[in-house]
Length: 148
Image (tube, rainbow, N blue to C red):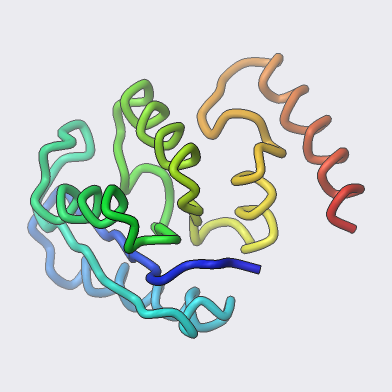
């Protein structure tokens, strides 16, 4: 299914709340275990007290470095807002991630939905309006038929 060396779990909270950050980590580790991602080495990257509007974060920078040198095959997050809250920059980052062959997984979706999305079955990760919704549902039907 996946061919990777490491799974990166990325956690971020804007407030400096260690309990919320720890809960995020635990939930993502559970998701990884339930979906067979724990058979790979897992590296946890956590930014505590950093806004999603700012992409200059210590752990996020280390995550990007791991992606660039090819040691990360999957990035697992709670949801897309953990990566960023500035839509254009987040969309650009996801586009680069997809082009590098790294699989992006959101824990609020099933692993199958994530894999379909990474194959381009849902169009863009971030979209808006009726055109996006129509494309999303059409692509989803096509991909479900293709994946069985």
